[in-house]
Amino acid sequence: MTEGKYPGELASPKQIHDLAEEYRKAATLLLQLGRSGKPLTRAPFRLSAIHAIELYLTALLLHRGHDPNQIRKMHHDLAARAKHTVDAGLRLRAKTANHLQSLSQNREYLVTRYGPELAATVSQINRLTATLEEVAAKVTLLIASPSRTVTVAIATVTGKT
Image (cartoon, rainbow, N blue to C red; front, side, top):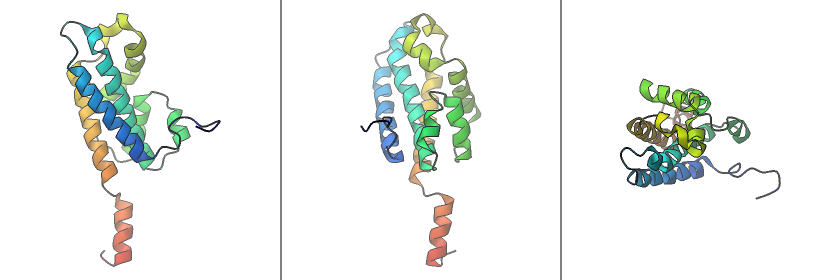
């Protein structure tokens, strides 16, 4: 790492997406370790799931040409990232979009990391799982498919408009 550079600053959208995939897989495995009635046992799942969501949204923003420094200035604000990803073509269900807002408003990233006394106040596991899976699936599709601009440009060059 060179002086003055932040970790991930030079990472490609694909590398960030691949990292998100690994955190999603880890979250899935960690979910199995949680015990009913013991909210703290779900904290490792929550942290991995929230981090995966953040990475998926970051990957999409990078894919759409956003400046890594501007993305980093959003810190762990999923609502801010989600707002920018709407402009980048991400269309989420209303429940999922609202959940991303509440994750930020309730500071669940910080509560999960540092607030064991608040473990029972965070969002439901099934809602977090659904948000993670929807964001993962839709971002993956958007990154995998060429943008309309690229498709139109290729069609114009090849004469297939």
